[in-house]
Image (cartoon, rainbow, N blue to C red):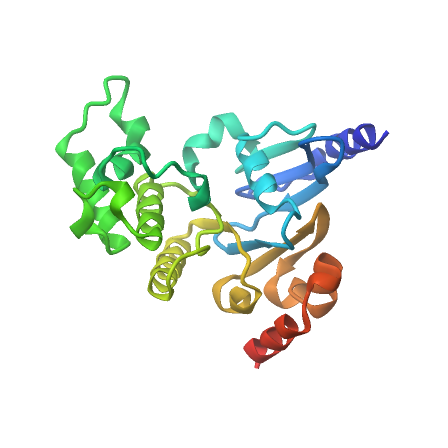
Length: 268
């Protein structure tokens, strides 16, 4: 019954997707067992903005992002990218996965990792030309990693590895950037560098969507928020949706008093 309802809602809602939205989900339902990880979620991302997907642990944040990319298969739901199918617009999307999900022992150089972002340009023969190397080096320069181009990726610190994966995304020259907790486990200098690059991407008219866990930095880093706890709780501008009422709806008793005090100080 629940799955049937989710499917029906997705079909109905799909008729009301804004054509100019870089990413829109309707009726998205994903389950890894009997209990849905994401249930009948509608989400509409605003073009040229930075949007944070926030919610407690196990709320379905990363699952929602993977479903939007087609990495996990939903039980029900509809995805459009710039008003068209995901398949036809996939080349306009760059994805930065969680660092913990990557096999960092794979023997490859930093430069080669970034060149992977150019696989569409390299063609079937994967022939790397000077222009490709220059583009990859330019992307490394934007994240402050040009001096590490010949270093093995496994020899880098966690923050450095995250910068390299961001450089790979930059090399794709995408219009929509999806990031899964890019600040998790990185040092303060790396976080500052990453947010600076993401804001520069937004200034270029690109769209950034990031799963985010640090509530204290939401107001400083993002324009829009999407709150989720299996179901959608709220979405909108930070001023409209990032409220104490909505946070308590999303987090419930898990939103500690200390966190609220930190948020209140950040708002001053």
